[in-house]
Length: 532
Image: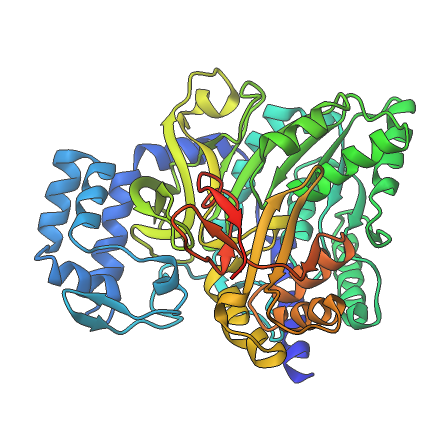
């Protein structure tokens, strides 16, 4: 209880600072300045944060690679930032996702490098503001973030508002309440920038165990209103029923009000499917979605109703990474915010399959970035390229795009990120200890359904089960122990996106049994079901 109280107090302090933080008058100028100085900013971070600190893990990696600051500066100035980063990666200056999260040790050249939760925090990002993030059963992991970082994010929002004409539309938010925080942050920035905030629908149904979070969310909404930002109070959807959102969009359309829905891809797709099922018209509505892959199937469902859909891409440690534009109307493609992050790709094999892919590596560039990270892998894959459109993002100089984005080492369905290694622990240790069998008897399959991302837990037929319902209830309960699992378990349950089948795990064409079969990482791998 004391941990939850501390979390709510931290959330309130951080939210108050967000409401009071100054916004940029000319966001475009901020971004142009960042693009002009991106290499210099990177070198400044390295010079001031990494090289003077022998305990910094990157400082040790540079030393093992035989690279001093002068060498780094010369390489960046001679070869360009991205080429220098690729060379650093080849020489051991990088972090895997599990290394960054502290799930595996950082080892280079046979030597272990000490790294902890605070090893990558940016000491230059001062200002006393708290970026509040939800935990699982704990109070989460608050981190300091400067007022300039908040303002920089608002600069991106200004571009989005201009690109999509959002001041002439009403915004409908389709995201969970606390402990998820990004939805409220989205609404707050949009409201402060002059957008009309229409409704907030939470895809998590009301329940007894969510009471404290519901009360805290309403308290923060009241705080926002006190500061002049007219946030709507959240409306909780009934379990597995997205028709209220579709009915509201249909009503607004008949009233002549254009709406834009901001949410995760799967719930947004469920809204479009509900409109088709109930004979409602949402033609002309627009969806801006993120949190998970915008697959061709999801896009097809939304566009079949006469709505349009555009992707956005964020990573919690970096914030906004990229945004789609009006002129790119196919696939999952965004303009990368290259004033804040550098992105390169390297070819590797996915951890939960035999598939080869282009893993994206990200590097922080801004002096106010909350973390100082070089070539960190977030277990996302994609294809980098150059934009050919003439949109707001391209005109300002954000011409690098990444397309075909998907996660290969973590679960992102319904907009909640779960580390693959955490889920594998449940599959290989926790479930066998409770229901019997071995690590190869349990497999979680993430797949594209007709209207949302779905998860199927296979339990081998040699495991004696009384009821698949017992396994379902136990797994969703244990999932709450994973970071992000508290929200994921409720979203999967309320959307009926999770099921358990008493059937043998699937195997790859090479005969491997993968505990976790993810979208993207396994789509190219032939899967077949056999008896063990």
